[in-house]
Image (cartoon, rainbow over all chains, first blue to last red; front, side, top):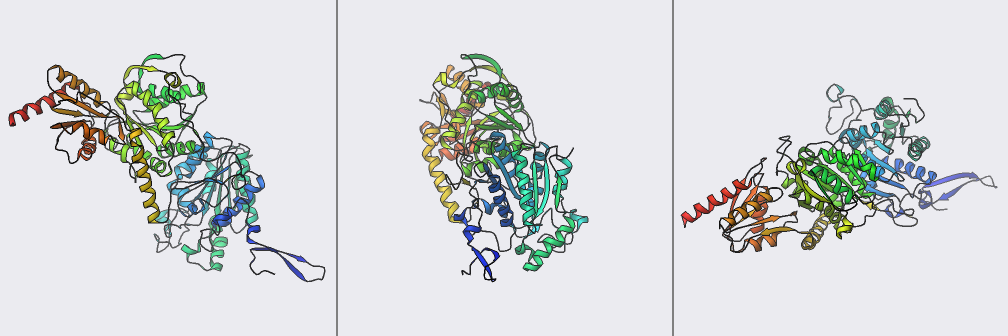
Length: 270
Length: 367
């Protein structure tokens, strides 16, 4: 038996012993992932690859690899510029939404995915995100919420939790000075039009994340409206957390502020 | 591409309307725009014409979005463009930079207004430097500076062809006077005049499944290593320089035996051309030189024009933006450089002629 396995399935053998079916890394990898660019460039413990795996699985299950264009922002999301076997465009900070929205206007047959961080979506690109939502642009925005500007070294993001220490809130975020965390999907649900979709998933619940990702893509496929998915993610590098602390932060601390679930469904009356 | 007129059509219209027709004639498929004076009527006429010719339009939330949606449209393989001015031009520099880095053949119309800041909505040439060298880069873009309504029409068609031929972002630099005044123009179908439209092709979304039938298209503007960007910028510069003879354009007249050459671009060049004719009629030996492309700048052509001339005078509705380009171009030549700089206001034929006569009178007194 090989020692290096990236995944395995357990089954009962005829002899009664438990055996493990070996799955090689290549087999475990979604085929939408580009093997030539793996291992990927994200830090150990980063949540991005889980979000990108869910996206790959959703694209695969919906069989839209041949018509999906992936756009990524500045920040850690840019590390995904050659991550997929998908046509991909890495843009400027905050500008992924308009690039993909412009692409979609010009080629409505394509499925446009704009992938960004919380800084890109809720701060520097917030006007684009809001206006794309208000225009009900037929694009899918997937936003990674890890509560910090990670690529630039861990500054406060719109999503930083109250009292959370970052490089620009070294004594902890004070909402009296810097406001409360941005609630993206709730915002999108408030301004979204009929046919739009807004949800928040988490890397701590992969199956649900795949489900939400699929719905965010299916909504565009059905030409119903704007689709927005925020994903609670991890950044042990900037959080300076151990694996256990990392998991506790995303599962407990973040979900106290950020409720996981669907906030607007295409069929909802608006 | 649909014909926009049956035959050559003589019209009397504003420059902004001409540009909307020119974009149609150029086969532009979609415009992304945001309101700012003095370019608004380009959008006004485009939105009236576009549905009749099955072309697209999106009004965005700002010029950043107008620029970046334009890039998305171009990368989808469409002839896409935007138009702006002044503070909008500043925001537009961000997407133009991305187009420079990623060789995205987007087209921009810039109708200059007064500057800096909001200033006037009327006229200026103070976006010359911004159009040529805006953003964090080396100015790897093509800039055509037009001077008449016919040129607005001709050069917008050319701008799309240049962009898609060489994959450098291309700017048509006009101004509020050109946009707002009415003038005679001939609208035509490019093919009737032997102008072929350069075909477009998509950057993304080509046929086939990426990674299965073909390699995925991966476009980026971010790099990790200093040497990597050093190589890229040098290669880009070499290519830009190599293409310069094919792209560069200028106009000149009465250069032989000239005591002075008047230099101006855009609408100001009309005033100096008329001033030269006026002075020539009086027996004053003066000539003119007008760069049509500001990027690439007609350096060799200008040096040749002025190498035997004692003096040049630069005219512009800015405080030395063209002047600095001229100084750089003629560096090392024994020519005296005078300038008549009028930021934010127009230059008339008479005052241009007076400036030249005054200078020549003074310099002859010195001799």
